[in-house]
Length: 354
Ligand code: NAD
Image: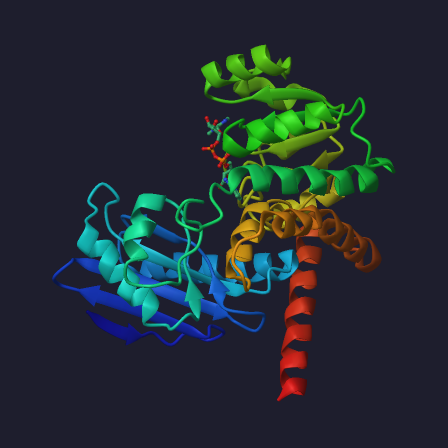
């Protein structure tokens, strides 16, 4: 196993691992550990080359620093990528990846991400203890999706308060695109709170099942943007807020869990100009990472503590909206400012403690 460092301005540590025996070619980026060890998932993709993989790992690890800072997990941001075809996996590959993660001595903590499952992480775990998100039986915090849904629900209360002057869901029309693990649970929580829930998904069987069970209204995915609603909740995939979709929106606010909803950052400004309140994705979808971060506390994972912290996504969004209002900026920029404030405060208290 050969580990080499790649120097990148603005990043604490970026390392490459190449191992002939297992075929591993991977990168780990530790963006910032001011607030704690760098937590971030591991993904596996058939990148065209190392340059493409490096671009991805740098972008994603920086995003994790911001997400963790606003979520107040007491952790920093990192990420790892394995260059390779996810159809070709072996125990040796993940054992070597475990040793690679371990070589950073806890500065980087890994978790699931694209094309990496719990079974893979269990092999990684043989070589390093710096792994989160394992099953409850293995001492982990289990499936993050219900916690992400819970966090989004509490985040939506702040959205309603900001957009409508009251956090009440009674009679509010919420349109959800994507009713998978998170969107499906979120729909249930909203219905229980009195919202009128409209769902769409490319998986029509899933839509039919949920409508039958919970009495949701449904709309076809192709035409869902024509439906007037109070809150639009993208819970399927990224980049859905773009030049084509934004002019069609008939909502007062957007609050969903999909990652990277804005096709480009400027789309956050376009939404603001249209008078649509946008709950920045990485703030409202942080329930899962908050849950996982509780594995790192003394005494191990504690669901009651996790849930209390997840519910504070409401407060985090209130702060983001207040910054946006006071500084007359878009909410996605305000979220970054809040993260930067928290990191700066962390840096200051570290210096003072020396
Ligand atoms: P999932 O795969 O369980 O559900 C996604 C759903 O979206 C599926 O039902 C799928 O059929 C549907 N879908 C896919 N493409 C679609 C399209 N073009 N139009 C309409 N529906 C479409 O995923 P999930 O775990 O529920 O996550 C949903 C989103 O939230 C993803 O973007 C994910 O990255 C993000 N996210 C998830 C978590 C989590 O804890 N699971 C945490 C943070 C962010």
